[in-house]
Amino acid sequence: MDDILAGGNLGKVLDLNATIVNREDLSDELTIFRIRPDADLPEGDWFVPGQYMVIGVNNVAQVELGGVQRPMSIASEPACRDYIEFYIRRVARPESNNPLTHHLFPLPEGERVFLRPKPKGHFTVPGTVGADDDRWKIYVSAGTGLAPFVSIVRDDLTQGRSLNKICIIHGASRPGDLGYQSELESLQKEHGLVYIPTVSRPADHPDWSGCHGRAEDRFLKSEIPWLEERMGLDSGSLSPEKAVVLVCGLQGTIGDSIIRLAQLGFVPAEKKIRKKLAIPEELTPSFFFEQYDSDPVIDLENSDLVEELRKNLGLT
Image (tube, rainbow, N blue to C red; front, side, top):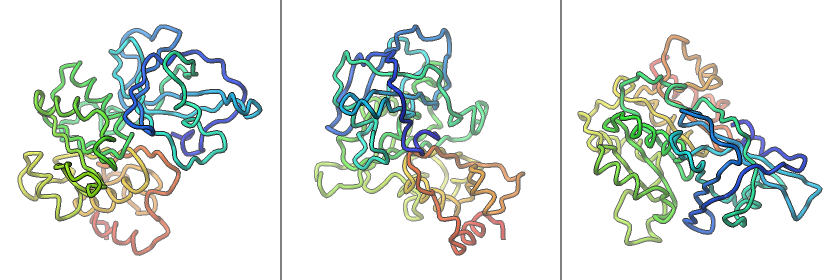
């Protein structure tokens, strides 16, 4: 998502071409937006679950700054014809002086926005491991990084594909920030999805009885046996032969997941990391990620870390 990493596209006043038909406010900072384009959606599977679209709004307070656009992962599935759904957090510390979420969040239902019509992105099952891969899929998300995975499992269900080898790990600060919790719990109960919500500030919510910590903490050595048990795997068997991992979110979740899963042999797909670690081309990737911020996911200039990762991946 190059536009995200650049802090958003600023420019001329946008020709608004879509309407907010519904908004579900989970908190003051977290909302599910359902947006209907003026033009009819294309027939058939018009996007691949996991892709994103660019949303734009105009800065009406500072007209000279024009419109701002940013990519947002699609949470709805291609079969949904009434709207396109996005799971969005208001950015507390924006990287730009014209932040999209600060202009988007005050807009009520019925207000107009801009949608760039063509979905983009390769963070999809066909674009990463391939549609025919039959290993476990572990989808790891922090906050709104859950959106592409919601789209994927919704489409799986519509297309009649089994959810029995899918595990979703979703981390949030508070229980109220666990968007889509009821829907995912239903998929777990009725269709075999493994759903693991985890809260990083449990002390503030003593009634929370689920997992504590961040999403990536499920990959701590002490937590792996529990995760294997939840997935129905034999103890000590979690490996790239059994599973692939897709992570969506911020730098910390991605970086710590890379470091911890390297100990189990999971190989990153990202080109810069592979080059720095001198990963042979024939070593098939089993770890993929989509990043929502611009910080490096791991410090590739840290020679000790590089050597540790190479050692854990069996490259030394």
